[in-house]
Length: 177
Image (tube, rainbow, N blue to C red):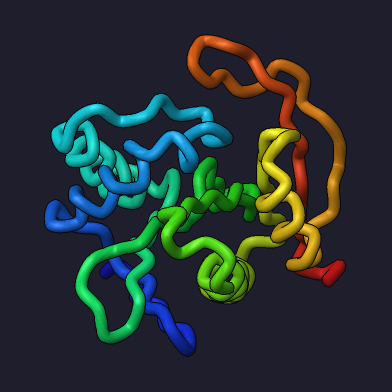
């Protein structure tokens, strides 16, 4: 059964076909995708494909992705979760995005903190990594604030609009927090 997580202001829940509109609102916005390594979506059908991808990823134990919903409202404002989940090696990479209308309100920090707790607790992870475009100051600041340590640079690691970009790699270790 898919886990639902709650914070003071948010519900992190399973993503359904009904969330395609919210996913499209995020991933069709170039301000969201410019540091994502994902081309900007052009159709709601592409967003529906994301819903299927997230569901299959969880079913196959490769990742877990929650929809971020504000309590008392309907519809998601973004997503958060783990990619490259390796239960055997007790590690995963965190990823998230939120619609620009909700930036700088503390929602992403709140969601990241809850997902980290779930990862180290319920999933038994010992390492949570993150890969971030070097120019993504908001994300690098957030990860630093959460205790992640920068480990280095991955050169030409992510492609965006046909161009290769360097990224930082970060980690947070369960026993070193």
